[in-house]
Length: 253
Length: 372
Image 1 (cartoon, rainbow over the protein chains, first blue to last red):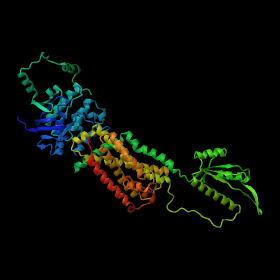
Image 2 (image 1 turned 90 degrees about the vertical axis):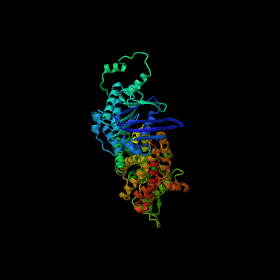
Image 3 (image 1 turned 180 degrees about the vertical axis):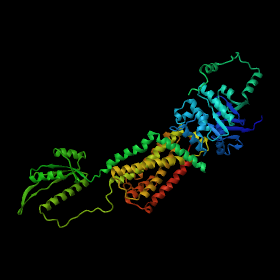
Image 4 (image 1 turned 90 degrees about the horizontal axis):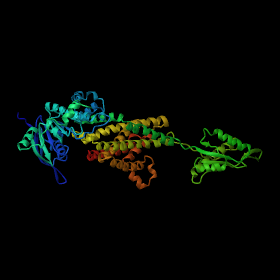
């Protein structure tokens, strides 16, 4: 199955004080996949994302989303993408339903708030304020707020940072559901398990450069093919498996 | 274009909902100006055309006694309010503390009967004592006392003086000092709502990162500024309406001019002052910057625009500076309409200057806006 790339990034550069924070990054994201940028803090993941989201000027190279040049038509780009910022702040004293309507108005749209809230399992919280939500609920709501304009591409910046294991798994399921509806997802993470379990393909980024791009499975196979062996035999389960087995998968909000 | 306005009104609705749920904001919009009005109103509505005086009677004559008695009985609806004192020393002490405007001293021979021809009539000279430096009050008090003695004299059959002078007030009904002060208070309320209310909120929301999500959408700074202007103009007008109602009910504010003209002036002025607040808020990166900037701008504005002190008290050069302050035409316009019954043509210059400031302020606010 050969899918058309929806995002094309070619030699993207961002310079701060003479340093290339993003240093000639190139990659393509296929339609309908979850593409992850994995890297340590300060690798340039967020900066790369913000350039693609038309939130930061591009200093070099080009990027297109769905055939639209990001640098030339930032407003058209913003219309077809959804953005979840690393830490989204919401207006206080505004119910979830009112927030979604307000977000819709930013795009000149009216929103089916009930369907959106149902999708992120927050129907019974419709009349609550965001400040009354738990961390996991807030993150799910943030994702709902990115869907108000029926985006073609969703950008998620470290979506599960700070969540407990149950809430993370719940959010992964939600992200996969959204992908299955045909929305392309580009996310950043520094969690290995997230990269391995959630992403269809991965770019590993460090010091502003992309080191390698492939599926998680292929990346592991390539490493093993190079003769890599762990010092200890890996047990068939890890502590997180124990934790989830004992505490259950059910979401705790 | 339609999407542009959907975005704006989406924000207006969100801001209105948050506003009515915010007790602090409600307090500062409605209760605080009311408290302010009550304090200022009670100070100024007390028109100081009455005198607090004490009568010190050193005379034992019947006439002197009945004079004091009559004076006290008539004190209620007279402009002379008579206060009780123990003796002259007590009275002087009270005058020093400004509790008294003057002292009427009846000397020991006051009211002594003198045979003037065939008619035995009481005579005497009373002393009107006042503090050095308050000659104006003293002069007025002497005139009042002369009037009283003249009427007693004529009652006792003295012929009327051949030449007299009588004062007559002209123009509209008397302009109370409250009415004058009230127009200044309305201007002050517009300014504080526009500048202080706004310039705090927007930088605080910038700092909390609230606008980052707006920016992620195809939403412009112009849309944010227009929506905020609509919201804040509405609430500062509501606050103004409440003050006008309270001023009319409690202090009997007397509107001389045209209500329609007053409404037009209020709407334009509120929109303009909100624009000044938006300019400050948009420029500032955080609350510290915005609060020092808004103090820097609003204090000279308040004092130089004639809001609290009439401009004619200022030296010539300061008066010409005052003409370039955006609040000056607002103060002038309100006064002309509300206390001088000005017509539209008479306040056209004020409308023109405010409109010019409105354009300038909003142009700069949109140009200089910073998202973070």
